[in-house]
View (cartoon, helix red, strand yellow):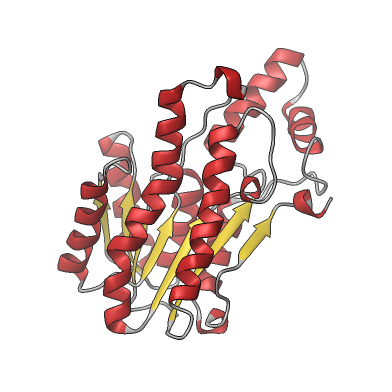
Length: 260
């Protein structure tokens, strides 16, 4: 379905971003991966995508805190592949602390990666999409773009901002073939979350299964994790012709979290 399309996915060397990248590749899109990690592991991921799906895959080490590197990533993608058709803004970091104790430098870094990088990526990619009259911008926000939790001031502020930015970009391009939407996951089973589960199990002397239920029970009524692959399937749908008139939406995948 996406054969001939080119997708950039930020923060895609693991977790949600990698799940989305693999699903887009499975639908035929050529892929640009981005993120940090061990060079050999990243190359294994990149070459694995090419081997598994018969598409082209590149890697960009662009630092999402640096606007000039974000623009260079987009420009290099266009130079290599001829276009950028799909932009998935996924890169993100987290820091937790009460507002009165939140380090200013951590606030700045969370806002830079979780919000400002989304703006800079869109600003760089959008002219290429407008020139073709087609594009899909998919921002991986969070349930925390819609509701709040304590000790997450920067993350919640950034994700609320992402949803607002999503709406503006959608409205500015409402009459063309470009869409901009946000996906808002709740708890997703990623390597980072698995570490939290393992730590909880060890700390409280309970099984991994019990730790998962305990973690989920606080917020997510389904008591089931969303998977990166499920979010990837949603990204594929948003990139499809069927989603051409979905513009400015914040789509929750949260097991009922925000329905409460």
